[in-house]
Length: 127
Image 1 (cartoon, rainbow, N blue to C red):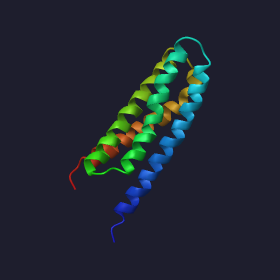
Image 2: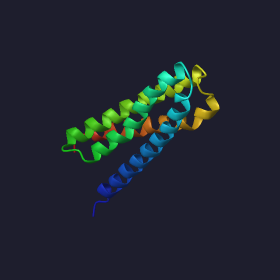
Image 3: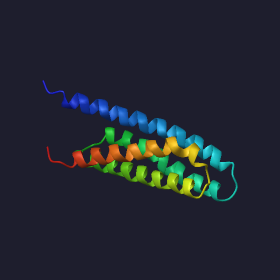
């Protein structure tokens, strides 16, 4: 019996759980940034959109109508993860938020990018 589909489903659920947890943390960051006036308040909307979109696209990919749809949704999730990582780096460099407060989110966003890159690359390999 081939265990690959079961392993793949387990990994898919894991990345979905991680993306959901990450989105919850992004919502909390948004709440913090939205209280600030100026730059932090404006940029908060950007990271809220990209950071929560990762999980939403992974959920859609799980219900993909075709292999192409699955790959497309995963690729969008990857792009959103990269954008979110960009905003987190920007917040750190410009000291909108202290680097110490963002280290965990930066590490997780970096890991999400790496995992999603692998998933997208592997999904593009013909079966």
